[in-house]
Length: 290
Image (cartoon, rainbow, N blue to C red; front, top):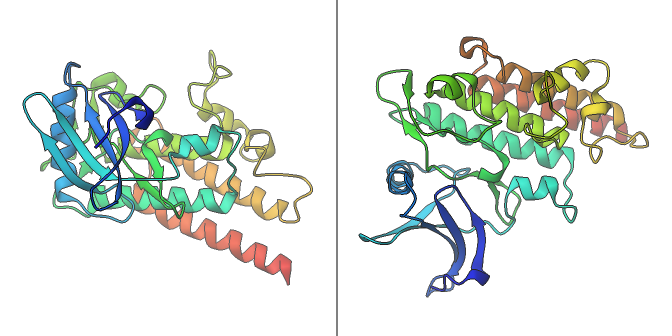
């Protein structure tokens, strides 16, 4: 398999990802860990432990592992459409409100499986658009379990590994405390970013202003001021239905992002709400066409 620079298509905190082809012609992604980096070996072990035991349609599948004293890599399912981040910020790509809604539902489904569908809860710890990959049918798959934690009997755990600035829950940043509700907080930020096309670290958010406060202050009266302009156009015959949909999604995102973990909703509730939001949007569009 050729790990040349020309086949490099992504970098992570502990490794590089290459596009490769197996002998049978199957295309794969090969994540090679930079073992000289502190934490890389631990990251490889964490991904192996998590991915070895889980199977879900919205999680990137592990095909094989390569491990020796000086080389460690994961051979993963190849995602031809890249990351959600690429689709949000690359001007060559555009996708509509329903496609984005389907993607965030698929990510929530993956999280529900991690949190409740396995014998021990698995906390991803790094939910963000770069870790959401899209297959050939634009179906979302959650990836990168390099800092994931498997919880035992306890409802939370602590870690010294920091997640991505702007996406991690306040209790994670302050105390290294990871829990299901920490993932929900990150998911809430990802929701806001997906529908506003603004990163939580955008330079416009300075001083007292944050992505959350910006969205919260506009949620009921000025939703068009915060929504991605690609999603809400005045001349769209379904403007009202889409505006209502965006308001519902961003209201849900705020509930995911509450400061106190106890006041955040869980991912099961989030999925239920998102499915209702999607049904309402589809029904309103269909009724407008009658």
